[in-house]
Every structure is written in C-alpha cells, then in structure tokens.
Length: 598
Ligand SMILES: Nc1nc2c(ncn2[C@@H]2O[C@H](COP(=O)(O)OP(=O)(O)OP(=O)(O)O)[C@@H](O)[C@H]2O)c(=O)[nH]1
Ligand SMILES: [Mg+2]
Image (cartoon, rainbow, N blue to C red; front, side, top):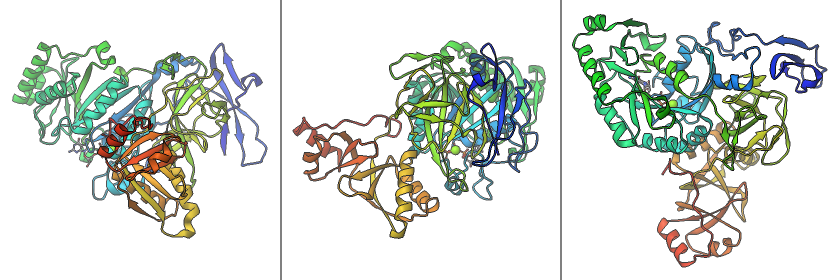
C-alpha cells in the first residue's frame, strides 16, 4: 500500500490558497491493477508529528518525518533547509559525527546504530553497505534527512578514501555548505587539502570540526595556525577547548563567554550531559585548564579571529569547533551552528551561468545513483537535489538529456538505507527516485521551463583491468551487473571496439574501486569475476578520426564508454607526451575533475 499525490491541482485534489498549498488529497493505491480506494484529504499540519516506527532500532520518539508547515511557499520552505556534506581525510570521524548528529537531531534512538568499533561492531546508519561494515570504512556517500528545531537537515556523509573521491566530488555538487572534520592529532592531512580545493572551487562555505579531543593530540593554537598556513582560510574559532587534547573537560563558547562542561557517557550512546557555568564557576571548577583556555581565547580576540557572516559565506573564513564525536562532546554546539550559520539553498546557476530562482518551476539534478540498497527489492535509486520549485510526488517532469517525460510516482525521502514515501519536497531537499532507469548522474529534471544544470565531470581513471566472468553460465548477470556499476560510477566501464561486452575494461582512480566492483558483482549480481590488470596508466578523450592511427600504435589502445566517448589509453605519460608531440593532429583531450584524486 502506498500513497499517491494526485498531480493535477485543477482537479481540486490539492487545495491552494494563493500559492500556498494548505491540503492535499491522498489516494490510497492498492496493489497493481486494483482500483484506487477512496481518497482521503489530509490537512497539512503545522505541528510536527513523530514518524511511525520504521526500524526496531529506532525508539518511538525518534522523529524523522519532515512535515510541511501549513501555508508554505517555496521561498519559506527553502529557507528552512540546510543541505551540507561532511568531508575529511579517511578516519577523521565523519561517519561517527553523522551518527551523533542523528542522535542529537532526535532521528536516532539513543544507543542505536553506534558507529563501528572495529570489533563487535554494530552497523552505523550511514555505513549500510556490507563491505563498509566489514571494513569499517565508508565506501559510498549516504544521504540522511531529518527535522531539527524548525529546520530540515539534509546531511550527506561522504567517504574519505582517495579511491572514492569521485563520489565525494559528486556529492559536493549537491551541498550548500560543508563540515570539514580534522583529527586533533593529525591536523590537515593530504586528502583534506584536496577537499578544501574542491570546496573553494565550488565556493562552499566551510565549517571546521576538530575532532577526537578526547585523545592526545596537538596544541589547539598550532592547529589553528596550520589551517591558516596550509589552506589559506582564516579560522574563526566559535568554541575553544578547556583541557588539552586527551584531557577534555569542555569548551568555552566564544560568543557568550560561557563554559560548557561535559560529562562522559559510556560509548557515547546517550547525549553527553552538559553543564553551563559562568567564568567564576569555571575557574573554580577547572583551575589551570580554565586559565590557559582564557589566555588562548584572549589571544584569538586580539588577532581578530572572530566570526564574520559575510566572509564565512564567501569561503574566506571558517568557524571552528572543538569536540569529540565519539563521546558526543561539542556535537550539539556544532549542529546548532550548522543550522544557524550554513546558508539556505539559493538560486542555482544553470549550464550557461544564469541563475534559476528558487520559486521558478521545479528543477533538480541527479548527483548519485545507487542500486540494490535494499537487497530484497533489487531496485535502483537516483538521488536528485531539488534546486527550484515544489516537487510533488506523481508529477510528470521532463528529463533533460533524453527530453522524455518522466513520472515521479515512486519518490522517497532518504535516511541511509531506509526510505519512506515523500509527497512534497523543496529546494535543498534530496529525493530518491526509485527505478529511474534512464536517469544518470548529472542529468537535469525539470517542469515547464527548460533548464540544464552543469554536468558533473567524471574523473580521469588511472588504473585499468580486464574483467571476465568466471562462470560463463552467469554471463547475463555479469553484463547486467557491469552495466549497473557503470551507471552508478563505482567504476567506469570501457569496451573494446571489436570485442564489445565480453571482456570489458574496468577503469578506476584507485584499486579499492576494483575491490568494490568485484565484491558487488559476486554478491549482488551473482557473477563471480576475475580481473587481469593491464599496463595502461593514462587516459585521454579522443574521437573517431584519431582512433585508427592510435590503435595502430604500440602501447596504446582506444576503448569506448557507454555514452560513446572514446578514451585513448597509454602505458605511460612519457609515451602519451611523445605521441602528442609527434602527431599534433590527434585529438587527445585531458579529462577533467581529477584534481581531488591526483
Ligand atoms: N577517540 C576517538 N575516536 C573517534 C572519534 N570519532 C571517531 N573516532 C574513531 O575513529 C574511527 C574512524 O571513524 P569514522 O567515523 O568511521 O571515520 P570516517 O571519517 O567516517 O572514515 P571514512 O568514511 O572511512 O573516511 C572509528 O574507529 C571511530 O570510532 C573521537 O571523537 N574520538
Ligand atoms: Mg565514514
């Protein structure tokens, strides 16, 4: 049983007051072929209602359902949204922080979904994939939506590993801000630097969370200096730690001068009890640690490291928070700050750089495709980020690439692996469209006025391996699986111009992508495969005219992607440079988007 929102307003099934939707009529849809049961009018309640119990791990009080306030307009609903990604070098604590945001947001029951401890681990909500749970790392990004205060949070947890950076890159296209997590003992790590570059390029405002303060780590002022020196963004600490890394007592909130003292709870399963003390009480309670924090805070004031909204939004400064996601210290202050400081969705530029206003007709773009999230359904979900207008489930929209109409009958809000039918969505929201067969990453969907948002570039692969099915009886499953992984962008799939589908070449930025592909082909598609590495290391985009001379050369091959793009593969950069110098007429264009991985 599911609910369908009638898409024809004129039939009186959605009730409008001016441009405000005040009620919608829901039709119960029976199983396939059966006539619809009688319609029910549901007034859109201004009061949030707790969600039904979706999961045995969720306590009945957990609130995930995002209610639409009666009388909402597009700009009003957009202003309530905060859509941000959590990014960092591997292992800094993104997934742990994500879980704690859910805990503090009331979307996860206390103790549920605790992030993997390497042994005896329970599964994290955002690391739902089997391989993620086995390895204890994030492999694919996860979308989680939940209401918080009077806002709606769309949170995107990303994988830190370099080999999965293309996935992170795509997700950043859907975010309006990012939270960068640093490990207090490690500071800025190589992948952190690359991610900062992408945020800068996308002009994403950035908040910084210095995590793991419960463990021995670096001096806080040294960490602040490092951010300034290495990434050129001015850190503006909003909270400051009391107690050195490894002896974490609490934080000073620089905005109020208050001291927030924490008490540890076992494994961080519950919210950390907080006590707010004024400076006199803090001095009495913490002695030298308080005095030291006071000196450091005074120094920050002198150098003018204060939050400035305009500079933050321009990406020139980054508010900094200290904490420990594991013990929940500092998490609530950070979540409040994200909701208060991060910008709401704004008009998004199209391909030509022209901004599509928020209240223009519906438009969205696809930033991620994922199949088999729910093994029993074996479906494929396209994640779209709404850019303008109001999305109503059931509406028929246009698919920019194919120009075909696209019916949005099965639309879900997403919460990790779980989903729930969503009837309405607004700019900033992420909607999962089920079985959107033709829809690919980068595609635009729109209603009425045509729009195309910029494509999301694919990375230049650097490793290439030939895949063969081990059991020829499974060839069909193999072909289906390979095509699916290609659409998801788990690996790029290249085909030999003569051999076709028999022995596709899998192309990746790094070897872990191959491991994921092999694991998923065997476990999800029932097609065990053998991979043989090739000697190619560099790819360039070429065309049909350049193909014959290139194929005739030693150390070069030309393969084709599913979208018809031809890639010339070379065994070495030296060889590529030589060919390019000797035969300047050959088309050998660099692939974009690999600065994050390079
Ligand atoms: N001591 C301590 N450990 C933490 C803290 N936050 C996370 N960890 C641990 O650090 C490890 C990595 O945490 P994750 O949350 O999986 O890190 P991640 O950034 O999501 O990692 P990837 O997604 O694989 O890049 C886990 O063992 C966590 O328990 C913290 O505040 N203190
Ligand atoms: Mg993770």
